[in-house]
Length: 100
Image (cartoon, rainbow, N blue to C red; front, top):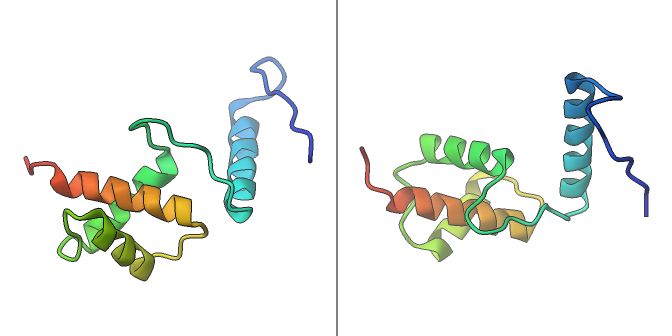
């Protein structure tokens, strides 16, 4: 297992920290180890992908999670089942919200 150094604000700037976090996130996704999503807190990646899918294919999605899983798999190449299910769950939640 590779070692990860703890980042503090004292020794790196914001740009270096962001690059480091992007690399770590990419490594988790490539190894199908995604950050655990607790409760209703969603990462920016999930929100961004979900919003793009809903914007492009709004008429395709339903209020049913199982149908949305298949639709997400059809429209997006998702590296892991857990990530696909998280995105499908967030899509379902977005579809159930009343439009303002």
